[in-house]
Each structure stands twice: as C-alpha cells, then as structure tokens.
Length: 68
Image (cartoon, rainbow, N blue to C red; front, side, top):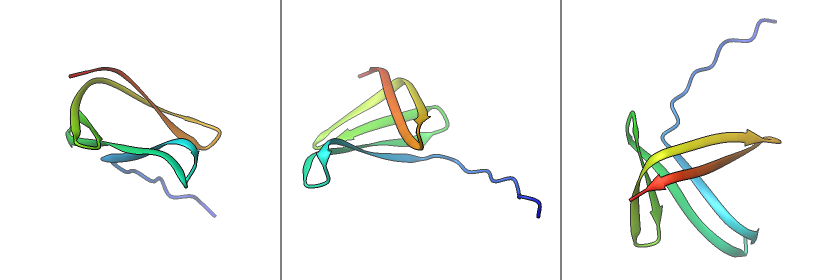
C-alpha cells in the first residue's frame, strides 16, 4: 500500500496553559494572511511578527518571539 502525500494549511492553533482541562487558560493563534498571525487572548489581540511552531512528542508547541 502506498501512502498518499498530505498537504494542509495551518490557519489556527488552540493553546491550553495549565495542569488540566479543568483549570488553566486557553488562547489561540490565528493566521489572517500568508505571513500574518494574531494571538487572541481573552479581550486582547496581538499581531505576531515572529512565530515558530514545532512538534515535540506528538504535541504542537509554539514560541512567540515578538508581537505588538
């Protein structure tokens, strides 16, 4: 059996920061254009200038280097 090549475009990432789903904080990253990402955190919205996503042990991680 031959595996088909999969392609996708990542346009949003939901992030949970905390010890469990019952406690902690949720926020997200949303891509509005090819090179523009925004952080949506409660009532605050920031534009990311440098953003890096990476995968560690099947978990998608993110580093925001700079934003306004």
